[in-house]
Image 1 (cartoon, one colour):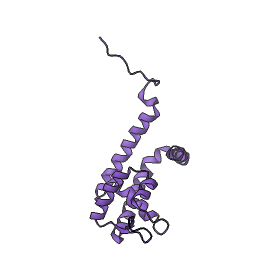
Image 2: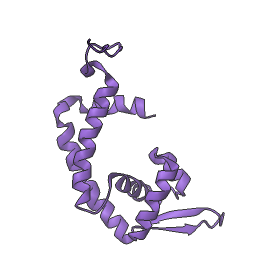
Image 3: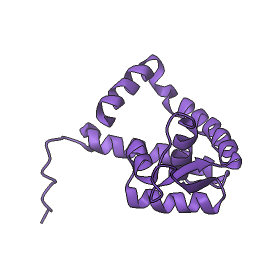
Length: 148
């Protein structure tokens, strides 16, 4: 006796935008993970460190603000920040206005590593998204609609 088929609105998985996004995301993350491992960084470590370095001088992040900015889970953000601190890539110091709040600052080593890593990440992005050709900018605009 045949098992019942999946009751879905799609004729095939390739018609499901969610399934395709999941496949694309996994493929992209695998490439990023492999490249960043050579720099002793996970992808999320890179993202959080890069956000701090990117906004250095513009935004003083505490842990909660960084999680909101990067759209990451606050508990996971806390764990990742601890590992970045252990690697001496950032410091957490009490705020001048609120001693209960810890302000995140990259160390010189953290800034240097973020800049090395962003080159690697952007090269992977360039190759990965090259399949889109001139549609890449439109694709980026469409992703922004979903991300915000």
